[in-house]
Length: 208
Image (tube, rainbow, N blue to C red):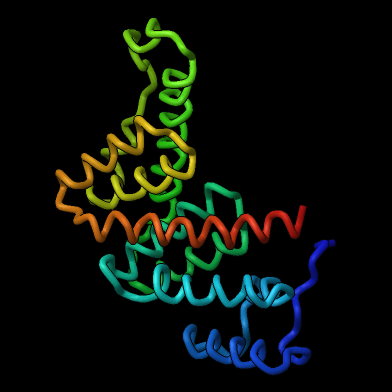
């Protein structure tokens, strides 16, 4: 049983009721999805999440909505947040994503986390010995999915940042720029990922 129960629409009043209405309007839905109802227990958090979600995750900006959905899915997978994994899987389908793209996104994000773990060790070990050793980890996934190279690098940048791998984040920022990503796009990728990191963290803690 969740330690924080969703706040039903029927119990929402005033500003919270209006926010629920705006969420339904944004999503073109008849009912408020459960994650937002859970956030509704802390009205300030719901307001923050809704505004950030609308601007940085759900609508076009420096990045298009499909790329944002891809990043949302990658972050949801990173946190193992089932409800948002399901949401973004369906979101990608509605945006005419290729069959199998969701699996590709999760595979790229997971492979990137493997590399983050390795390069963080190099950075944190306090020894120069490991810097001269071969990585030795196979990572053909990056080059063998339905995703274009720029999208792969945006995923890698976002996940590397969440994993606090400084050398990886720096390297993927550089590679993203080389592939044509603007600084505005890189910033929005991080804003999108950070928004979903907050949403997933809240839900995981509520359900733990």
